[in-house]
Length: 409
Image 1 (spheres, one colour):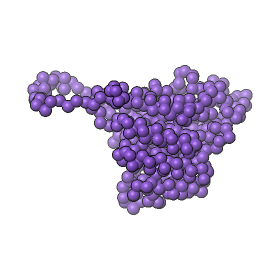
Image 2 (cartoon, helix red, strand yellow; image 1 turned 90 degrees about the vertical axis):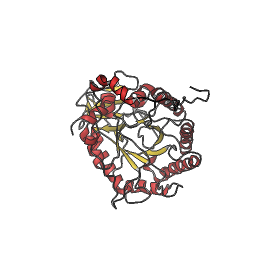
Image 3 (cartoon, helix red, strand yellow; image 1 turned 135 degrees about the vertical axis):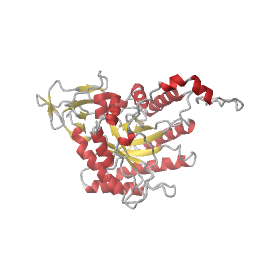
Image 4 (cartoon, one colour; image 1 turned 45 degrees about the vertical axis):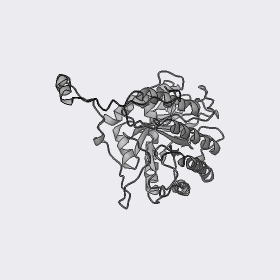
């Protein structure tokens, strides 16, 4: 690296040098004849959501995720090794970090845990797949245990540490190559509105200093497992305060940076169960207008849905299967058991966002119970532009993205 901390750029060849393409073809004819192209994801077979608005216009998303598969923020996106594997996977179009705080989170393996269990069951045997952040092996491909419950908080790594991880991964992956397109990293963050504003400043500074970084920020307003701190996205006043902080920060950097390099911003939402909740969120998104003419809402994407709180799994002794901060074992439900609710949230938000010009171009990242191409197709059908995985990533590892891409629907 140079003294400025930037990776050196490729040096152009002397313009007087020429290459005889035809002679090269003859020289390597035998190698080209035996070359078998690497199998690529059959993206043409993947169902596409309708990018046409009800009046016939095309949506204008401000974040590109292609292929439209990624991980959602989860324990399986905690370490630099986790993120490196996700970034290297040819079947992911973006990588999301585990949710971080400016000063980190006091993770405790004795409290913050998860368990896999079969959908439709609310009790498990002592042999049920169970883990915490330190347990190995991480990935459990038990065919029956398609749902999960977790009592996690946030990542023990700080936001600054994640920015360091990302610099390391992107630098190692692309140094000395002419790769044009780099996958975006979606950095999940949380904290107070002021802390979110500071988090955006850190991301924007990182993106401004290194043009190889493609950064977006996802503000987690929906974790149900922090004792005494309900998810802000259920409260209109609190949600409005966060959106105002995001708008202020984004406006500050918009004038300093090229439009394409300004980090995009999304919010991760909890599951909603009645019409008034969806309307409340849409109202807040409409009110949080970007100062850029014609851009609409300051929010570029929403991720829905996070886990369903107030859920409980018992063991055979009728005791809570997990520990938790409150000591009740109550946590967030995910995986197959959440899939119908997640589909309903995506479908409802796509319909309600399309009803207003300031929200019609907000991208939806659909999350909840997808582990095969059929589930992926359902999410895309109801309006998710991209689809993210958490429980299935924990069960199968990074290979789940190839599984989703190649499995017959």
